[in-house]
Every structure is written in C-alpha cells, then in structure tokens.
Image (cartoon, rainbow, N blue to C red; front, side, top):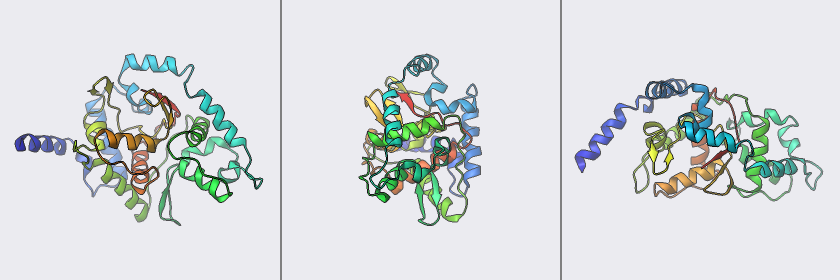
Length: 277
C-alpha cells in the first residue's frame, strides 16, 4: 500500500510542474494551459468556457438542446425583478453596481486593497443590501443565485481579466492556489486530482470537468439540485464528495479559491448561467 501511495504521489508530481509555489500567476497560467494542450490536443482553448462539454460530444449535443429552453429561465426573470426592485430608502442595486449591467460580472472576483480581501459578485450583492438597510440573501441559492445569473447573462461574451497585481493580491492568489492543490478529506484528494490530472475522465456516469473555465458559467442550474446554485455552493459539494468538511460560502478559503480559478481562466469568455448535470 505504501508503495502504491508513493507511486501515485510521484505520478502527480511528475505531471504537475505548475504546482511550484515560487511560480507567479502568469507562469501558472502558461504551465496549466500547456498541460491541457499537451494532454487534450483536440480541445480549443476558447471552448473551455463550456466545461466538460468541451470533450463529450454526445453530452454537448444534449446540453445545447437544453439551452434552447433553459431550466433557469424563470430564475433570470426573478433576477430581473430583483434588479429593478427599489430599496426602502429609495435606492437600488444600480446605485451599488452602476446602471450598465454588461460591465458588472466581468469585474469579479477582484482584490480590494482597502479591505485586504477578495470581493465576489455574490459578496457585493449582499453588501449592497446591508448598506441600504435591507435583509441579505442566503448565500447558496434562491434570490442571490437568480440575481447573479441575471447579471452574468448580461455580461455574456466578455472575457475574464482577473490577474493579481501587488504582493497582497498575490498572497490571496497563492492561498487559493494552495487550496486547489492541497489534499484533503477521507479520500485524500485535491481539486487538481479531479480537475487537472483526471479532467475529462469518467467518474461513475459523469465526466470530470477541466479546471480551465471553472468560473465562467456560474451560477449553474444542476439537475442534481433541481435549482440554480452559486459557485461556492458547488465548492461545498465538492468538499463533501471527498468526505472533507466544507467551508462556509464566502469564507476566505472559497474566495481565495475563486480568485485563483478565475485567474487561471483569464481570457475565456463569460457564458453563465449554465445548465449542468
């Protein structure tokens, strides 16, 4: 058993040159893309915005048919309603985010130097509500997912520009990078084990999605959930799948992970919300 574990560890190290902690964001991006290009040469970089449908032709055809009448359509209507609904003080979400919906989603996540934290779209939605004396939404689903989906849809087609600059921003990036590659849970797996080294491979009846493009299509309507859910809801579900205790939505751990993954997806188009199994 010890020899088997050692062999697996050696395999992982040998095929993970981009794990080196000394590498910066630009070097990490280059190395990760080179890895996918070498191991999945038939995939076009721009197509990674579609997640697993980059690889599975049959599933992609089904997904494209689903997207003609998306199961999250009612959520987009709800999101539009929430966006247009004024607060008791006479203000609205437009006073927090600006009136141009198409320019909002592409900004997130980003590093806030004044507060030394990563700001996410969902985090700023609830901050806007609190600042205006309104009750915040629940983090994982419902109104927050609907409004996030409406904002994401308006920004569809714009390219992710997330790129850490400055020591403190890079420190947050490295925190997310460490989380992504660290083993955890009773199954002793990392995010990278599934979404880099085993990307596109079968796990029971599903293919494992690639790390490239992870943040492009959220929030998503999952058939398993029967509802729309946020990225941090998915992070929690992944942790549970490997029998690790999940962190709370919008925890520093998940915000850093989102920041890292968005950086890795720099240059890909936003195409959320999406439908997934």
